[in-house]
Amino acid sequence: MANIISDETIEYVGILAKLELSEEEKEQAKKDMGEMLDYIDQLNALDTSSVEPMSHVFSVHNVFREDVVTNEDDRENILKNAPEEQEGSFVVPKTVE
Amino acid sequence: MDLLELTAVALGQKIQKKETSAVEATQAVLNQIDKVEGTVHSYVTVDQEGAIKKAKQVQEKIEAGQLTGPLAGVPVAIKDNMCTEGMRTTCSSKILENFVPTYTAEAVLNLEKAGAVIIGKTNMDEFAMGSTTETSAYGITTNPWNKEHVPGGSSGGSCAAVAANECFYALGSDTGGSIRQPSSFCGVTGIKPTYGTVSRYGLIAYGSSLDQIGPVAKDVTDCATILNTIASYDKKDSTSYQRESYDFTKALVDDVKGMKIGIPKGYFGEGLDSEVSNAVMAAAKELEKKGAILEEFDLGLVEYAIPAYYVIADAEASSNLSRFDGVKYGYRAEDYKGLHHMYKKTRSEGFGPEVKRRIMLGSFVLSSGYYDAYYLKALRTKALIKQEFDKAFAKYDMILGPAAPTTAPKVGASLADPIKMYLGDIYTISVNLAGLPGISVPCGMDSKGLPIGLQLIGDCFQENKILQAAYAFEQTRAYKSPFDK
Image 1 (cartoon, one colour):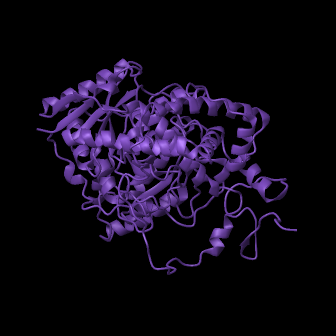
Image 2 (cartoon, rainbow over the protein chains, first blue to last red):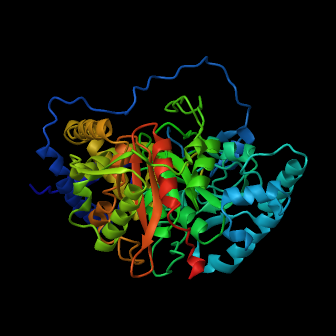
């Protein structure tokens, strides 16, 4: 079964992925995603009804620690990487009027 | 003998014996970079000044008897997805073009404690997504054996740098074959350890459940020695695994008598280049001559590994890469209307096509309505693949096969058809899904003069078995460098 990716799907995925695609990129993405999903659909030949999903190959557990700060204040260096900073904070575009 | 031709361990010994120094070795590597980097382009960043300064400091400590380890004073290159404090770390992406980490990845820190001299950061596929090192935002790396061919990927820069003597060893990372495949293409030795063996703290994540850092080097002895140094239990990585032993060099024994090696029939079918097949089987015969027991068997579900992998890896990538939003670090777009538009424009301008393709697919398979059908289905498939390996390792000490179906393709031949490119990961990818260790060792050359890699896959925590077999095989042939021609 060939997967046809609609314009709506690409719009929706673009919102989830926080990507703004050009018209050309959207067309390419529709084609790429359709082909990839066709390829992935071969997994359907496999009966997995009695198998639990496996996230990790070993039984890993949450690693807890005391809620104590162990690193030093590195604010100045961290902010050096910010595209925009002011008074020790990251600057973002205005989000509320 | 030219200093540059030494293995990392041989150089380390010479430095300890005062026959050379960390500074001399570093200068030799920097000269070599001057000479060949214009063609090979292994590096995104070369820290000439920092390396010389560090080499001097390390040399003083060696002379004072404070650094006595095998890697003290040996110059190393680090894949550009591992954070290095004060040294730009780009993941070969425009979105991190000016990112300077404030801390160092644990694996790199372990090397520094052992006296490593970091030369610079190596080129890679953007965010480690690719098999050719052609998706880098900073230009392609070429194969040191033939500049018309790719070095493989995504750790193509690390593998090319080792092959071209632009460092004595390197660190790479392997999510679906990104150490083993370029090692095969560049004629060097690379090992992906068992998941959880090397801390991922400071490794910029692609597919967190699959990513693992490992050594790229000139021989098996170097790989084992580097692994001894970088592997550690780390509280800062919640998937770090406390192992019983971190002694990998004890596996360096030339003996495979009685070792049972399984050869999956399905690995030698359609799509495998005949020259690769012949070289890998000839290597298997060498091991048999030394007393290993070879047996062909059916490894199930081989064809399902790639589709399952791309669902899982892309899903994790779409989540991991959501941190690149133009707020905390890296690139920020200009001229935007509000916060969300700033995010979208920044990411659209900052990421390359392959990264966007994977983020889109990953977002899709995690979206409501498709999560069960794709993401959970892939995780269930992963469980079945793990079971197949469990069955195999109940019978065999290791699995033998090629690292890649072909030798290095030509530059520009791969990116146009993503699915075809993904199919090249057939021998490496299931190893990551099952968390297993795998090593690629050079085992021959094709008629074009390009290297072929033999892959040995071990059960979880059985690095020493594959290291021992790789070491034994290595004794049957000499290391070849592109400069031997």
